[in-house]
Image (cartoon, rainbow, N blue to C red; front, side):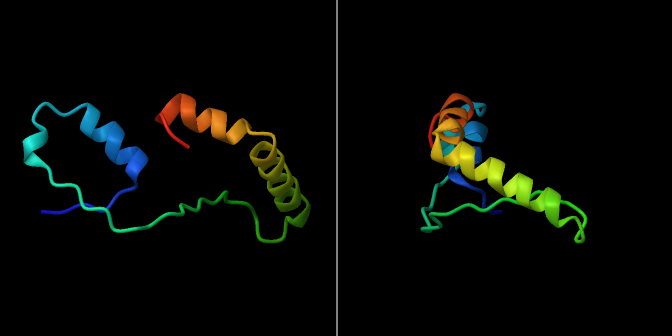
Length: 74
């Protein structure tokens, strides 16, 4: 059996496992992780507001702080 998941989720999952000897970790080099927010295709104003909000959170360090708090890494 195998599973391809991101490092943050893998760390969380493994932190709740009792026997880590059952797992082999392979680093495959996917450095970036994209995400999406679903909106109506025609709602350009909402898309722009969401994109602006995420960019503001990224620039001021808020996204990094949230990632550190909840996932232990950025």
